[in-house]
Image (cartoon, rainbow, N blue to C red; front, top):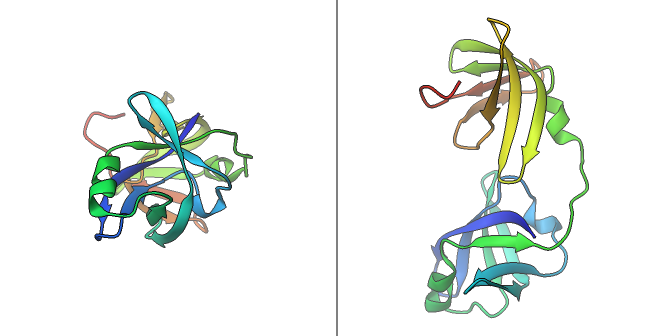
Length: 158
């Protein structure tokens, strides 16, 4: 099973959930998703979902109808039993220049789509190649025309 999201918190009193799904468009999921309880995956269907920002959703799942139900789901991963077609969007970063705020780090040479931890391989000024996780919390701006990716990376990461 693939981890496609995480339930961050309840939303409202009708069983709504705030979900983070940085690597998947949840509206494209067909069929059941799974949430583990006591080590066993329990199937759920999305009854309703609406996007909130670039990677978050408010979702309502079949059988989750109250604040109490929703609170039992908080902190759990959402899993999908299947595979996703690669749309090639990750490859769009190859050749891009990566910045840590105003400092130019280098150029993206490759990537590794580790589930839940997408990483870029960047050739830095001294010729070394470093691996940098591409996490939504690090992204400051993306400029497709200039092919610039501006990040704010924790000290010592590269």
